[in-house]
Image (cartoon, rainbow, N blue to C red):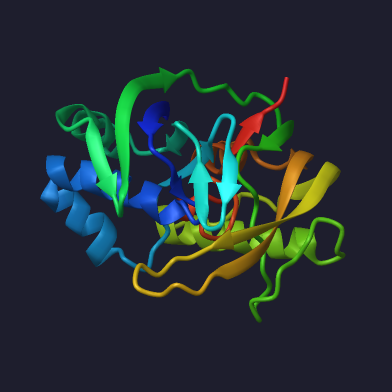
Length: 235
């Protein structure tokens, strides 16, 4: 399932991803403490069944703040239960405060998912794809080991979330991609930023349709649940 949430805001932190995750967690917790505990505590180290992308229309950046009056979050998940709690929780309280910034939900739209009927498809990134090797070094689309590391990431995600392997290796053909460096902070009480070297653009990918559906719905990146690796179909 996919949904688009539109918020009125009074600015937002440049490192915005934890703010989005905090909103998602609060919506789920308000609807089902059992599901929340299972997903974020019992399965704390496992991959979460969602990913997201964020868009700020007409944004400007001032120091560590995004200057904008609107934020659009697109969320995708294979879990109907998660999306149901997200919808119900967001309707219960349409105003949310993250740090000193207010988020007022003005619209919640369910989006029609596109059907994958071919083992060879074009995709575009809605949020950048983060690929790293076992030493934590970033891997870019134009490096010889990118496809291998990409498959390793997807294999780990599938084993963690669905207890299975890829049905066959994914073949990644980069067509129109570029490097993007992301400045983030994944620690609420630490001010130092982390920098992630990521991949963004359009690509051709080949694989088993069931695997392609998984990465379309749940993301295809490290840290997908933190707003990396959300993709859409082209055409």
